[in-house]
Image (tube, rainbow, N blue to C red; front, top):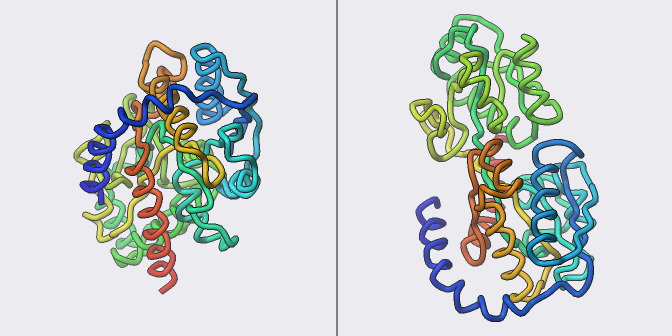
Length: 316
């Protein structure tokens, strides 16, 4: 799937110029309501507000941010679904919202009820412990569990809980899975000794650099930037990953010129490290990951299908 997405991104890059003339003429019909699915003051909220600030400066648009949080972005999705689709209402979620969370919620909607606009950054999702545990990678965790040690595994979403369950099942070990609200809560639990390890989506980078934390495995389909030798989930017998991106969406049926203009404008901001938004994305999320157009449609559809498979396998 990764190869197909990469190829689609390249193909879309060739086609985008033909849509550029139409998109260049598009302007919002009024103020843009930017709905944010993340708690105020966090890294994702900061990213969204800084992007909005730069778009206002560059294009003269008026953007009004507001928060609708909860249920892994599904509260935002349900709120935005029936809003005007003319580009005046957009939202920031994660791809997991239109994938696993939408599947699990079974709320009568699918990704086709929304317009994916553009991604901004991915997650450096790793399985992390304190270095003082003495573990070098997840194989050491397996050995500890098989020797009788209780392993408390912190997760921050139902999808990650399912992946943690499969990690235990495929390796013949029992994991005490503890679900908390957000990656910072996982990191705090690991640092406090209340959890032995847990999923963290880039927030661990400073601790890893300082030698206090260690990435035991990559939860992505690719190696972690900071710890490229850490095993992948596929090396540990699990066929699913925690690949994901921050994603701007709108209601279904957004005109192509509005979608293209918003996508290109946001992409320019996040890829410009001289902007505050670009700096935050570089420092907090490992740099921009921009996917749009046909490639983004394929990514969202594939994630939704994979989520159905994960739910099925984890329930067996």
